[in-house]
Image (cartoon, rainbow, N blue to C red; front, side):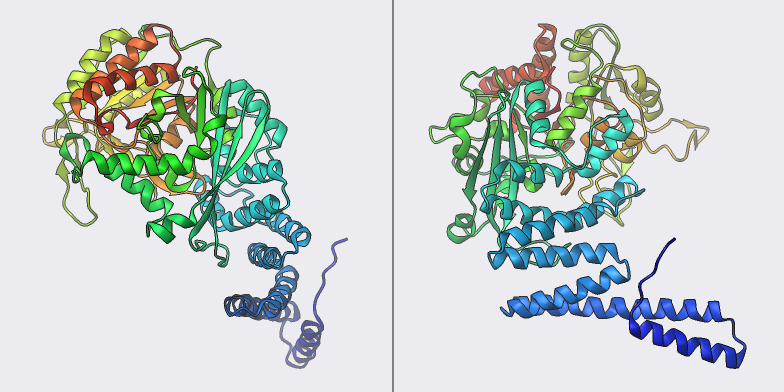
Length: 579
């Protein structure tokens, strides 16, 4: 039997409705339901008022009053079963208790908040899950602060992992029929993933110093939490102070990460989005500053052997950081010391491992490869409201494809042959895929990020398919089922997209979701000559039976010797599996 709980005021109102209905012959049930709905709306409005009142009280240091306002709001939200607002109220209460030093009650309240907020996803699609996790980030961050204050560093790592790439993990798990429990990664599961990957995992979590209601950004960055997980099972926690960035340098980690990328003169392939090229000294200062924040606190924990793998798990703008180009105080690049990979979360690594099609290293030269180079370019509106313009051709990308194709024992698709339709026909059976073309960045929604191919040819002035504009979007890739063991996106900005708490929503995420365990993407476009050189070296290394991570590292080092500037060799990163 289902029971209902209503307040005294609602009960009195219903009695009034009943007597009125009997007097006027109005349908009792219809009128009562209207009153219940109206009363629920009024109750929600009152709870919302209390929630905002609590925020104003907290901002003016009326902490006890704020606590009471949020407690009253929480009671109402629970009565009217407004779960999302209940989660926000619990977040606010948990933060307030944390600031008062009541760590035990804060932890209990925040765990309740996470349980409530995670229950909301239900049957939401991937896009809506990403959005709802954006609103929940504060709760995970505050709970990490509470746990660190209690010296529960392992549990804090579990929460840090639980609060990132959740929609991505759930999407991968559903597609792979995985038995992984995506909501509750335990410390033992995290250690096991490091063991299976045969790599040191480095997880970053950006912590903010100022409170705001859930769904809003939290003030300025205050600390960087860093966990290092070794294959041996050892887990070490370190911190970096970020307050000095905005106190002394008048900047923050987001701005520094973006500036480091832009400072090396990056451009769009074929001359699109050209930016300034400052001095090498400025570049080195920025990369050294990032190294000081991201690497120096954990340098003693990283492997001594250059061949040992380090997998970085970035967050937010750290996805834009070219980790290979970070420099220590002696000017030595990180790629010279370590073999580097990245992943949006630790659990994603477990799922990409399950996607591997074989038990050994990637076999190169079996003929089941797809290579695209310099398609006849489509016309694209690069700015909203402006008429479409044809993307410039990429003769360097054509040379790259022609050089690489023999190594993979295949014929490249070039020019008019490289249509979107031809690519989609061959994609499902290809084991290695190499795209040397334009990439279109969408950093607003992410899923409109795309790869440029030739549009369908005209027949008597009419297109074969008016819907085929030559662009393969991240949204379309998400719906594919791929068998590729490796996809290389040798195009500009393919590692970028909409940066969220769920990672980067863009091409790499869609390719991994479609079944690819290893994706090589770029943070910018390097010159045609150095790209062709680096990629040729990469595939030659794979032919020598090196794993993907080592093959990419060695290709970067050789390219660095030949070209020097990080803009020409540090753009590419391997996401996912090394083998």
